[in-house]
Image (spheres, rainbow, N blue to C red):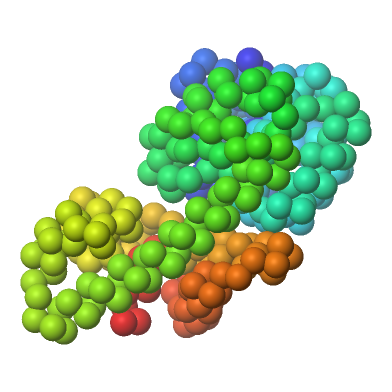
Length: 289
């Protein structure tokens, strides 16, 4: 299949490479010359504009920084430029309202579109083991599933347009709040004289167990390898966690939902990022405790 891929950052670059590995003809665009060079090394054809990349595409996949950019790119350079038969798949994490707005504009112009944000981070993007949460109608999901499966291990239909984004921000609100609680517990355990590995061995098999502990422990040398073992480099940047928490709290406000833990997690990550830590993995917030 001829697939245009827009946005080749830390996540998009690995995703585009996995589409090539799956046998697709990938036409890539990014504003960064370095990202384009890496995409070319991975077998993608590279282009100097979005409009050029989407010409003749059977599908368009995007991985972009925020909703405003998604709205702009699709409105100006994808809708009306890609063939009307092309399936549009936005894998960015953005607000639900913008996802629905862009999907409605695509539908009005005769395109099928899904929102398909991801979970798993850079390692999963490179390894092709992402989880996709997909919003869109049944027909669009049926077309999207095989494309997404080439980049991930799990593809779940969450519901109509915007449902993928809703699932992603709710999931990451749990993750942000749980990571802070996990960091608090490890810091407290040490101050109470517990060995971190002993505490891990106990809590990872007891009711305190969580993904933040058993798959992504915030202390180096404890549990499976995580960014903590690499001085909190790589992984999921605190600035991106903050972005997702802001999206979640804003969505909660619009929906009239009470999220005191999510709101407090947003405040803590905002302070952490403002102190110059936005580029560190989000588990590095343990350093503040």
